[in-house]
Image 1: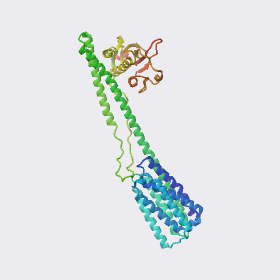
Image 2: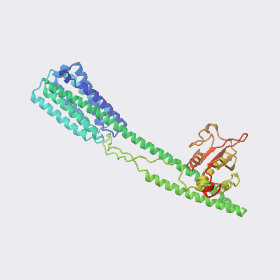
Image 3: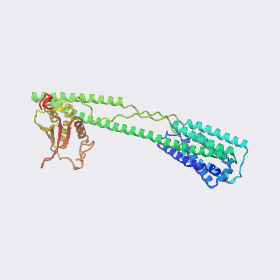
Image 4: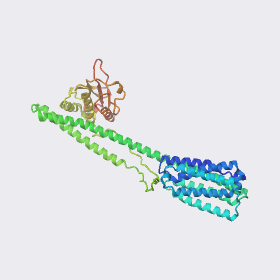
Length: 489
C-alpha cells in the first residue's frame, strides 16, 4: 500500500500527457481556443508527471521517505505554473508555449529527482507539514481562480481542470500531512484522489479538443457555404452581363440601322421598332428581377455571428465567447427569376430575335410555324439568343432555326455552319466555363441556357449530327400548348 500510494504519478502521467497534447492541438487549430499560459501549464504538468512516475517506479520507497522534499517540489510546480501565467502576454510565450512549458516541467522534474536522490531524508514536524500544506492549498486556490477566469475556454472544461487541480492538491496534502506514518486510510484517499483527478483531466482534454473541432468545423462549413454563395452570385452577375451585352448589341445595331438607312420599307421599319421596344422591355424586367434577387439575398444572408476579438497584449491570443454561426441560405442559381410562365408565340419570339441578329450582321434563316408553347417568353428568348450568338461566333455568320413537333413537346432546332464541337469538351459542353480551344467566348452561355430550360420544364441538348455536314444543331424542347389549355398548338 505504501508503494502504491507513492506511485500516483503512474495514474496522473498518462492523463497529463493527453491533456497537454489536446490543449496544444486546440491552440494550434484555433488561436482563441485557450490562452497560451494554459497550454504551457498543461505541458508543465505532462512532462513533470512523466518524470515523477519514472522516479516512483524506480525508487518507490525512497519517494515515500522523502515526503518533505516531494512536498516542496509540489510547491515549486505550482509556483512555476503561476509564473507562466504572469508571463503569458509575452511574445516568446505566444510563439512557443508548449516548448516553454515542457522545459519548465523538465526543470521541475530534475529538481525533484535531485532533491529526492541526493539530499538527506527530510522528516519535518507536524507544524512544518501543516505550513507546507497551507502554502500548497493557497497556491492551488490562486491557480484555480486563474483557470476559472480563462474565458476563451469552455466553462465545463475549466470546471474539470479545477476539479482535477483540487483533487491532486487534496491527495498530495493528505500524503504530506501523513508524513512517514503512511496510514492505510490516508493511502486510499491519496489513490482515490489521483484516479479521480486523472478522470477529470481526461474529460477536460477530450472536451476541450471536441469543442474546438466542432466550432472550427462550424466556421469552416459556414465559410465554405459563403464562398459557394459568392461564386454563385458572381456567376449570376456574369450571366446577366452576358445577356445584357447581347441585348444591347441588338438594340444598338437596330437603332443605327433605323437612323442611317432611310430606304427601309415601312413594314420592316415597324418590325425593327417593335423589336427594339420588346428588347428594352425585356432588359427592364431583367434588371428589376436582378435587383429584387440581390435584395432577397441580402435579407436572408445575415453576417457571421462571430464576436470581435478582445483587446490583448502583444503576442497574446485574442479570445471571446463561444462562436455561433447561423445556417447559411442556399446558394442562388445563376438564373435570375423571370416573369411568370404563360403561352408563348414562337413566331413572334423568333421573329424579333432574327431581326436583332440580322441587324448585327448575322443571317438567320427561319420560317413561321404557328406554334404556341408553355413557358416564359423572356427565358425562351434568352436561350435562343444564346444559341444564335454562338452560331454567329463559331459559324460563318449564318444560322438556321426550325420548329418541329415531338411526342410530348415542341422542339426548336438552331443550327450553325461552324466547325462543330471539339471532342475534348463534348462531355462537358453544358458545364460552366467549358469552351473549345481558341474559342472567343466565356463558356457560360450554354450552361445558362440549359439551366433556364430545366427550370422551365423543358430541355436543351445537342442534336444528332447530319452526315457530310459541318456545324452543330442544338435542340430546345418546350411543353406544347394542348387543346384543353384553350389554345391549339
